[in-house]
Each structure stands twice: as structure tokens, then as C-alpha cells.
Amino acid sequence: MNKPVVITKWERPSMDVMNALEQAGVSTIHEAQGRTGLLAPYMRPIYTGACAAGSAVTVSIPPGDNLMIHVAVEVCGPGDILIVVPTSHCTDGYFGELLATSLRTRGVKGLVIEAGCRDIRALSEMKFPVWSRAVSSQGTVKASLGSVNIPVVCAGALIHPGDVVVGDDDGVVVVKREDAAAVAEASAKRIAKEDATRERLLKGESGLDIYGWRQKLTALGLEYRPPIEDTK
Image (cartoon, rainbow, N blue to C red; front, side, top):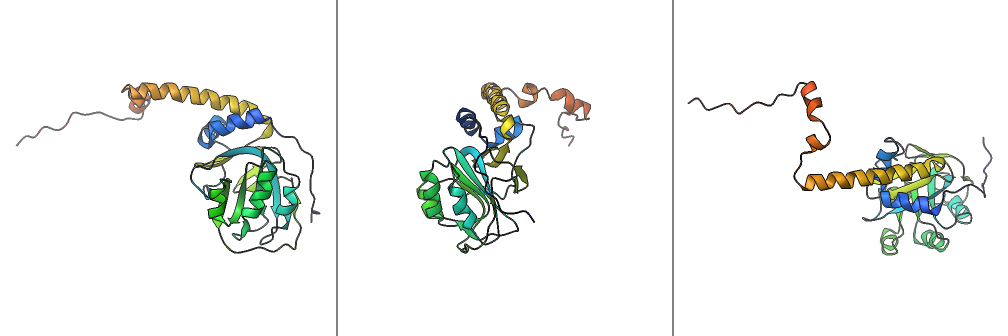
């Protein structure tokens, strides 16, 4: 059994890279990095329009016990996103307004938690972004230890401390810290390409021609036939 630990120093990506990824958005990033990095679709924002990108601070935490979230707050800094993962399935409400206030004071961008959160109205009013598996008023205790800043698997995605985590209305995606600059550049190129495609679509061009799919359709055996005339 691993001993509980808090890692207090780790590498973070640059703020410029994180800001660029936040502007790109989850769907663009997912495509730009080879359709990888998505968290499971049950991770949803608690209010529409939530958007954040930041450096991951990870928390491995016992079910029904949020003591280690309070510990993790102390090592968080500006531009971070807190990632909380119970060691077994749990939908209790680990997180609410007061913890959000503590994190915001430290410049934390948001929270991703594979469990429940509470105080949804207050969190929405203060515009603190949270992506959670559930919403629950079921409280937690503060009795057991966990670990901060170790690799965790959150909603099916492996996340290391310092990886960039991006969330918006489309869900949540993780970008490896060492790949973050390259993915930001690839995302910008994808956005430019989509802007050009959008202009062509607005002019009435067919997507089949823009993307060069007519030959593929023919190779797959698709036939276009005139309508059958009424012989009556």
C-alpha cells in the first residue's frame, strides 16, 4: 500500500499556452491532438458557458472524505485546475462554495471532480467552473488521508500534475504538459482551416466538394439516379 504523500513542486506549462488552449476549446483540441485525451462524457459543467484551462493539481481521495481537498488547496496557485478522483466510485458532494472561495483566492481556474459537488446555485452565481460526475447534497467526512500531485485516472483519462486540462460545454480534455505548446499550435491551425471552410460553406459550396469526398463515395459504390417517372 502506498503511503499518502503531497508533492509540492512540479512543472507547469506557460500561461500563454494554457490561454491559447482555453480559446481553442475542447472539441478542437481533441481533434488537433489525434482524437485523444477526452474524459468520459458524464463529466459535465454545472452551468452553461463554463470554460477554463489550467495546469492540473491532482488529488487521489478516499470515498466520502474530502479532507485532502483542503490539503490540496494549499499547494494550488494561479492558473491551476484541481482534479479530484475518489479511489472507488462515489457521488457524494465533496465540494461547495467555501472550497471554491478558497481556490479562487489562490487564482485557481476551476475544478474537475469524478464525484459529486454541491452548492450549485452559489457556484454558478460566483462563476466558478466545475465539471463533475454528479450533483449531490450528501456530505462528506474529514477523517482519512489521500495523496496530492500523483498520476490519477479521471473519467478514463490519465492525468499527471502539470498537464493542461481544458473544460467547456463540450466536456473535458487533457493535454500532456510536454505536448501542450505543439497542441496549441495545431489547434490554431485547425481553427484557421475551419474559418476558411466556413466561408466557403456560407457561399453555398458543398461540403462534399470542399472535403473532396465525391470520389470516395463513388469508390464505395454510391449511385445517383434520376427519379423514376410516373408511367400511369
